[in-house]
Image 1 (cartoon, protein in one colour):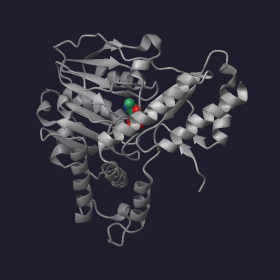
Image 2 (cartoon, rainbow, N blue to C red):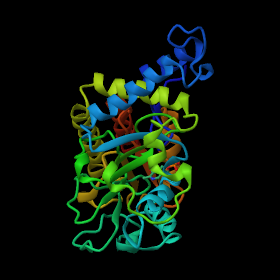
Image 3 (cartoon, rainbow, N blue to C red):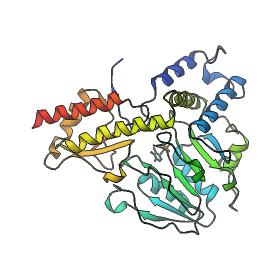
Length: 357
Ligand SMILES: *Cc1c(COP(=O)(O)O)cnc(C)c1O
């Protein structure tokens, strides 16, 4: 198989051992003589996977008993609507830090009063707004902890006077999180915890049931709490691979150990971006994401963009093109992206510099 360095933004690199286990399970799932995608989701073998996966989430993120973990469909994008459906009674506030945050806000606007408490739209979302005040009369305050497209990240669990809700699609499991500070955390699995097709939700049970609207059955978190995420057929294969991905996280030493490696990987790449005169970072230094590293050609070298892209491709780099809305480059260095890949990209940037200077 061709050796590549996978910097895709999502779907993206997954731990090889999780992929290998998935291939095995597609042949014979737990000695059942059937592929995992052909067994009943009511079988005891499948129930064991669901239980193990839930338990791993709780263990790895230290999730208190006040919260429930759900595995749903629809992606983070349906999650935007779920949040508004389940939590918005009168008024909600959003931190507008990018396109995903805007899309989340749009869904809330369809159901009630919702607005951006603060925004970084003025400079194409290249920083995280600070010094804003969260009004105490909001039903909830919504943040996007990692802004996948712009490479900015909120790396601490902020204090919030109202229920705090976070889209953590692209940085879940990358750092320890104080779950007790959140009423709800959700996201698509396909950035850091598995393949596309499953959406994780961590929800505080006593934060639910406070809205007066009718909530359609499938959009009511309580349906899925009661049904153990199996009210209807769950995305079995995606959950299977997610479970194997979490097992890998645990084997790596857990979220704290992964966090340390993530910080080292990001530091390595940002150091090269800052040192190499051909490149420059685009996100405000204090808000730099450790998951998505965005950069462009520096002034005077803009004409070399396509050439560097080709140069990097020839050396096995995959997925470093920036999002179509911002251009430039983006290296997504999620949990499963090995330090060797980051080093390979750094070497590639150095080589390119030597060629051009
Ligand atoms: C990718 C992404 C989404 C969209 O996820 P889907 O599962 O494709 O709907 C939402 N929010 C953030 C922060 C993302 O990175």
